[in-house]
Image (cartoon, rainbow, N blue to C red; front, side, top):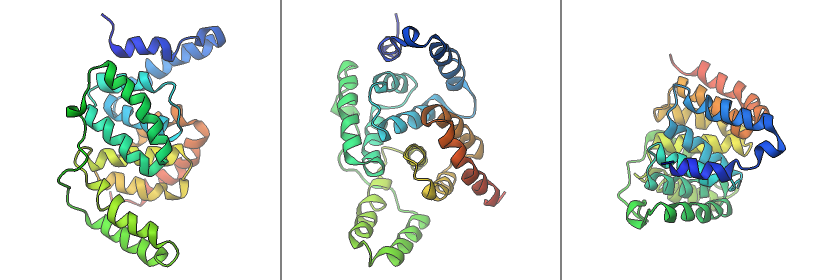
Length: 238
């Protein structure tokens, strides 16, 4: 019996051969047959990267396939729920709400109900020193320019969202930096790469994240950010 991911791939990739047999070959042999099976990054991590890109760019047509793949790879419904919530702040509310519609349909088809999702409120993780320092810097630099942004960054973004336990800080970093690359917010990337490594992502894993992103954001985007990532790697203590 075929898995839900196999079923949804029929619709996700239906018609490729009629338009581009070469693209079908690259999709089947290279992307799904090679990239997704490379070491150093789990299928769960690749799912976080890919879903983050699709949500950030509002590319919902392929989301059912990748949601099924994520669930079949071991990503929990509560984690997917929390990724959508997290990306409302990093890719915009409208993109997150668009993802809600697609995800809701997949969850219903698979019998996933509210008991399996991240709750609206939960006991929060402790805030770390790096986040406190970042908030202090933001207040000093921008408190007089946009006090509302500083307020919500302090009270909601870093004082609540990043501390929700349904998604680990490591996985939030993975989703965030994938979104930063996907949306071209390159000046902020170095801080998020550093934060990701502070939260437990290794250099080998981040290198593989860049490989995954090349396929889902395009080669030009990744070659634009590689000098930034390289600089972070070289400056961090060995």
